[in-house]
Amino acid sequence: MVRIDIISVLPQLIESPFNASIIKRAIEKKIVEIHFHDLKDYSTSKRKQIDDYQFGGGSGMVIMIEPIKKCIDSLKKKRDYKEVIYMTPDAEILNQKTANKLSIEGNLIILCGHYKGVDQRVRDKLITMEISIGDYVLSGGELPAAVLCDSIIRLIPGVLGDETSALTDSFQDGILAPPVYTRPAKFENTNVPKILLSGNKKKIEEWREDKAIERTKKIRPNFFN
Ligand code: SAH
Image 1 (cartoon, protein in one colour):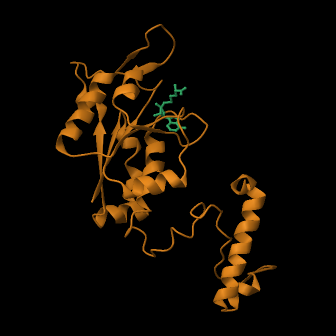
Image 2 (cartoon, protein in one colour; image 1 turned 120 degrees about the horizontal axis):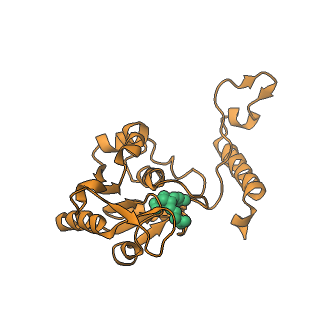
Image 3 (cartoon, rainbow, N blue to C red; image 1 turned 45 degrees about the horizontal axis):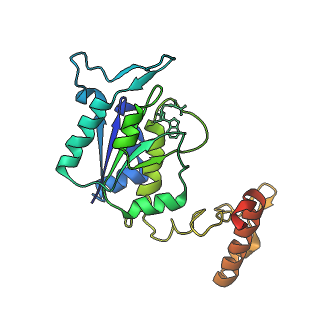
């Protein structure tokens, strides 16, 4: 079983995506185990302080290294981890290749920042991998961590009911997914493409591939460079 430990100053911000749908099923099937850690529980000060002002001045609080180190050390003492990941906007952007890679590796620690982020020494000393979910800034790393976990967990064998369904999603073979349709076959003035109702598996496959390529050329032409 893969174990993911998520460290945050606001763990309640992240719990709900794990309580429904595919991720919940993966947890119930004991394919993955998720644990949340509140940084305040690892504070080394009496006032449960976990952040402080920036050296050099400037607005915004910075999360201190001591509680983070204490939390990571206590986890590492109990088991091995493949990566200690920090969610941060100034990192390489998450893509399907990274999700695939992390889904076949072992246990992960994911650190969520808040405020101005974490003391640089955390990143230099304790973190083995940094991931952004896109070129925009959010208030905390909790939503990015949930995005990362979802992208990884759905790829672990046994999580999705239909084993092949993750393979036919966008990005898996370098192109976007083709359009999909369901009932009714006729809705107002629009009909489902006839080929999909033909029962001819080979022709349907060809049509899907053509549509996927057409869509990719239009929306993500850079995939063909
Ligand atoms: N001062 C930082 C931003 C801090 S945002 C900077 O300018 O780069 C506060 C926290 O939210 C970060 O520590 C990080 O954990 C999280 N975060 C914000 N945007 C993110 C993104 N696009 N991807 C991943 N994490 C993000």
